[in-house]
Image (cartoon, rainbow, N blue to C red):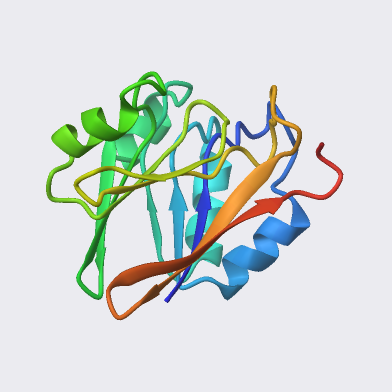
Length: 167
């Protein structure tokens, strides 16, 4: 199963639309994961329409209309792999331990908020992934998103993609 991970899209404040290469990845994916800060409802509607399957959560910049349609923590099981998505996880220092304690029955945690790509594994085996932002690189050299593959209940082939023209 092919996954696309994104966060912090901030449409239409940071861009008018998602980058073309991200839309291509969405079309090829079996599951799209969005870790919050959508900002505007039309992106949720368009991703829902264009994704085979979508799981997401709201972020700190998402207003009442998005919060009414999205949970604080989204969850999905993929061939036995337990994935959760949340916007904020707090400071980088101590993140693995803090998230392992907060999400003990999760195999993969996708998060956003910082716009900083992240790919680590806690001592408990919890995999933490932040795809960065495809539209607002902030202090990062590139705007980014991630793809991954779940094969027989195991997350494999996590790849960070640089967005052309946004860095």
